[in-house]
Length: 426
Image 1 (cartoon, one colour):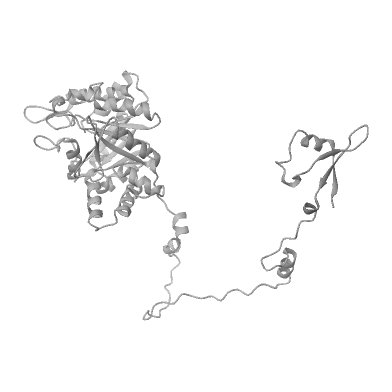
Image 2 (cartoon, helix red, strand yellow):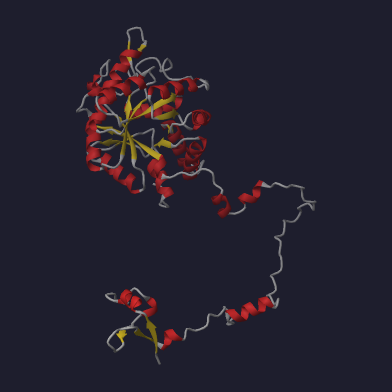
C-alpha cells in the first residue's frame, strides 16, 4: 500500500531536472502533477516499507521508549562488581601515600600518553645527507653501514625517489671529488659544471619540488683537506677563504640550490655570502649556517666517505672547542646579524644542551646534524645485538627534536621515515 504527500510548487522546482539517486528518502519515486489549469501541488508516491519504519530496539530487544521508561522509574541494570587487580604475594600492606599530584596518572594508557605527548617527529623534519661521486656504480662506505657514495646519474636518483616515497623531501649533497681536481685554493668548488652543480640541475629537473641543501666549504676540493686556504706556516686564511666561499655559494645557487650551508666556520662568511647572493639576484636562496660546529671526534666515518681528512694538523683553530657552551651565543648573534635563515648545531646528540641554548635564544629555525659517528655507533650496536637499532634510532631523533631542533640532518632519514609511515625499517 502507498500514500501520497503533497508539495508546493516551490518544492516541485527543487525536484525538477534531478534524478532521485541523490535523495535516499525518495528512492524509486516519481513526481506526478495533479490535473487542472494551474499546478498547485504534486503527489509523491511513498512505498509502504518507507512509511512504516520499524521501531529502533536495544540489543535486549526492548524499544527506546521502554528503556527510557525504566530510567525514569529508577530501574537500572546492576553495575558489575568492582574488582581490583591483585598484587603479587609478599607485597607489603601499607597505607597509600597522601599525594594530591600523581604524574603517573597521565601515563597510564597508550591513549593518554599519546594525547599528552609534547614532542613529535615526522618525515618533514628530516634532511637526508647524500654522498655523490663521478662513477656510475654505488660504492659502499665501510664505516657507515647502509650508506653509499652514489653515482650522480643513477644511484642518486633512485635514493631520492625512494626517500620521497616515504615523505622525505629535503636532501643535502656532499661530493667525493677526484684528487686530480683538488688544489690548495679549492678552485673546483665554484666550477659551474662541477659535480655538485651538475647534480643540482639533474635533481631539480627530475624532482622540482624537493629542497636541495648544499655544503659550502673547501675541504672536499682542497689538496690540504682543510675547510679554508692554508698558508705556508699552517694558518687557515680567513678572509681569502671567505672570498672563495662566496663564489662557491653563487655557483650552487645558479645551479638551482634552495639552501646553501656554509660549514667552514670562517668569521664573517654568512654576511659575505648573503651579499654575494643578493648581488647576483638570488634573494630567495636561504643560508643555513653551521653556527655551532665543534671540533669533534664524531666526524671520522664522514671523512672516510669523502676522503677529506686534513693532510696535517686539525681543525681546532676554526671549529669550536667541545668544552665551550657560551661561545655558541657569540656565533649565534653573529650569524643572525649577518642574515642567516637557519642555525645548525653539529654534532647532534652529544650537544643537546647547545641545541636548547640556541632554541632559547633565537627565533630562527634550528637544525641539528646527527653526524656519521652517531649513526655508525647505533648501527654497530644494533649489529652486535647490544641495542635495538630501530628503537634507539627513533629515540635519538626524538631527543634532538625535544632539545629544540626543527629539522635534523641524519643518515637515518629514509629508514626512520619508513618507521614513521608504518613500513618495515630498511
